[in-house]
Structures are given as C-alpha cells and as structure tokens.
Image (cartoon, rainbow, N blue to C red; front, top):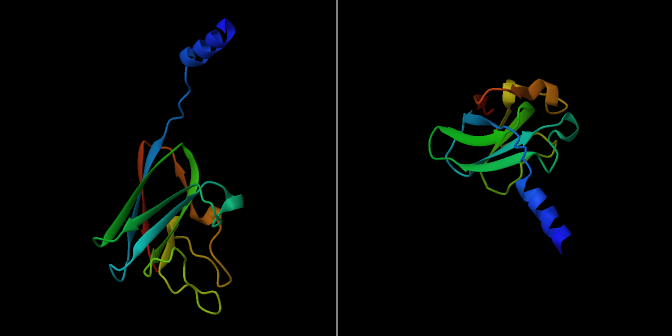
Amino acid sequence: MIILLLNWLTLLLAPQTIEPTQNLLIQVVGMESKQGAVQVAIFNSPDKFLERPCHQYAIETIEQDTVQASFNLPPGEYAVAVYHDENENKELDKNFFGIPYEAYGFSNDARGSRLGPPSFNDAKVTIAQKQQTVYIKLR
C-alpha cells in the first residue's frame, strides 16, 4: 500500500512537460452564399494529407463575408484544406468526373493539377509564431 502511495505521489509531484502551442487563425473568403457551413481541416503530415482523420477539424457557420476558425497547435508544418459545404452533408460534393462543385481552397492558395489536388508541400505553412493568420480564398 505504501509503495502504491509513493508511486502516486511521485507521478503527482513530477514536473509536467507542457508542449507550447501557437494560435493559428484561418480566415476564409469567397463564399457565394451564406447557406451551409465551412469545413476546415488541418493536416500535419504529407502521408495523411486530405485523408481522414485529419489532425484537427472545425465546422464554422457562415454569418459574414469572412469565416474564421482558430486552432491551437504545436509549432510545426501544417496544410489547411477548406470547403463550403452548402448542403451540410459533410462531404465535398463532386460531379461524375470527380470535379468538386462545392467551393474549396487550400493554404498558400495552393492549386492542384487537372488530375488532382495540390500536394502537402504546396499547401504547407510553418507555424512558429504565437499568433499566425492564414487567408484562404474559395474557388
């Protein structure tokens, strides 16, 4: 019993390492309507870029011309993908050929080729400041 109590006290009194976080503010512009919501996804790895689950995620309602989402992240490299989910089905709707017909955008205003989305490296931003803002224009 005493050993368990000592182990518990050791864990309780041990210095805690808290990873510092930075605030990343995403500002999205270019919504053609106020219907639906804007889905914002943060990715922290090229291997998992545009795959589920993402690193962090937010759904923001559209009340003004600009939608904002805020994330607390450890310093590092991230890529941001957003889309205007007008029908709120939580999917980026595409036509028969796989071309999105809901507006979308990426950090760094990254654009993919005709054959697909941009790469993580094209969209990545380095978060190193206490407060950083990324602007994304939907197309």
